[in-house]
Image (cartoon, rainbow, N blue to C red; front, side, top):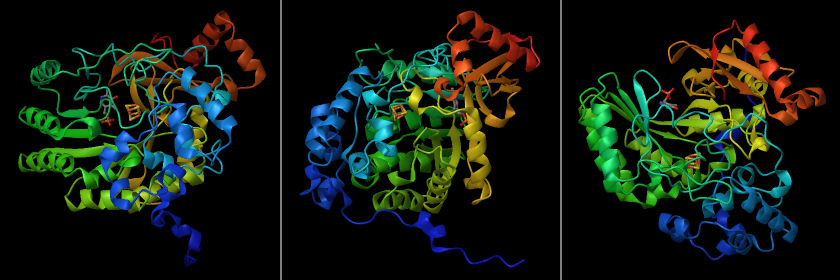
Length: 451
Ligand SMILES: *Cc1c(COP(=O)(O)O)cnc(C)c1O
Ligand code: SF4
């Protein structure tokens, strides 16, 4: 059968926002292109308080929205920091529904009670940490966290236990933020020949000065057994202009990539787009520059309610990323983070979205949907559960090559369950019994790691 020509909407992923779109925001009406593209200007004008938000969008939203945000700012576990670029990508005619607002600006009216089983460090990154700022969980790879600041703060951050300023609710744990602590991490890595692969995250390497990128890159490339490295940054999604207007930073990343290539080692950039509206002509120019330098960019999204849990939205994101030569690598289940239950989705949603997305584009641009098993089991394909009790929202995973002999459980958001199930979770004894039963059905009894 002959394939019918695609309708014009099928090319939606190729169309991104063009022109000086930021001028729609009252505070940026007189900002010219050179200024808007200046990463220093972006950093200085980031929105960190309800007052700054009000100043930026005065006239676009009603005062009730700002009051709602004020309430959200005080109750959130993460500090707030939103770049002007992100402010300009929000559709302020629908601020409650907007997917970018949802990620960065908490609203008191949208907060809902947490699942009773949530903790702050649900991935137990601190437990698998031999020295500060290093998580060694998998056989051949480790996660290095050299700083605790980011160009923006995401409401849903997995590392809300450590990232950003202390908030009214959370005192943060320090990561390895000094050169002496970095050296301890390098020494540990050098002492472990099985480590081939280092993820440099944080925080966000966008906030590292160029010379620190080179220091870290050189130190890790000099370790003979290191074969792969990735610099992880949300920057391309939230402040793409830095790649264009901070040549020292972009050149430092390029230098490490080139040096790695000369040594036969792969160095890539991993980024974090969540919604197709985050991508504009500025993103396209930035990704084109990285591509022209031979830099591989991969994307890791988080599946977020109201942001990308709609199959068509995720499909558009994946296709738009592929179009810009960014490989969609993972879509993560939202971690069991406190204070953002309104953002989580059930495991079933990931399964449904994945089914829709697979087949839309190249397989190597099609993400794997994973659940980073709470309690330190590592990433599991969402489909690989040993048992999934949809009624009570309990998925049970095991990870034979990471933590053999153990079971890990993920809990669907409490508000998505039927009233009866919600009631059972409120009784600790009933909750224990439900979890025990799910583990039994998963082929237990293995030891179970509490989330
Ligand atoms: C995600 C992660 C990695 C990298 O895992 P990949 O599946 O190779 O992307 C390494 N260490 C930790 C602790 C991680 O969470
Ligand atoms: S950029 Fe990454 S580390 Fe920083 S707040 Fe967002 S999710 Fe957390």
